[in-house]
Image: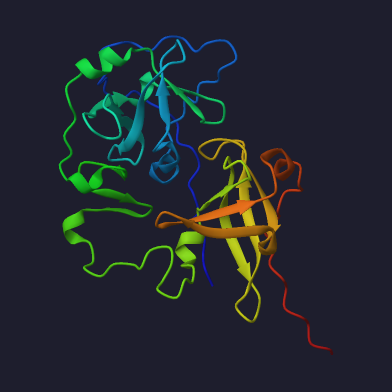
Length: 261
């Protein structure tokens, strides 16, 4: 039975060391500041987000997320400049200087692209930590931080094996897209029948970093899967609004049948 990752609740925020010289501007009308610092597991959702300035210009992209010894996000590593990865440099921005809105779709900082470029370049202790949630000891795992040097020598086959079968670990946490390739949710859990066939998928929809989300049950037959490069890609005809309108999924365990007396 495949167990899903239980994501810890949002942690209360505190002060973080300021890596950017420019102070953050107040959040504009209509925006919502996400003040809580997510833990390492939730912070993976930040990787790949573009960063905009107050003039709505894209000035960078979140490449990696740095956490402190308590597992709280204290900063992000942002890529700025360059084209198609050539000439890009990475700098470190304090979490407190970022403004997050629109369910995490919009990340903003009160700086220009030139100001970002002028910051000291960030250098990873291990280049393999790029694109990860990590701290100064190694890549973050839900229960521990594992330095690369101590990782097992064997490697997973990835999302698919040679026969095209899906790895269970690839399903849990996988993003679900609609026909327009917009992300509408992520897989929290799956349920299989007594023959091992997937029947239902629990999808988390709405909210950001664990806040304001709801779980709904979708039939596996309502999802299609395929390759997106080397990764699993799930697609559905459901929209985010139609998923939100579905009843909340309740985790209930079937009770064993009582024997007759």
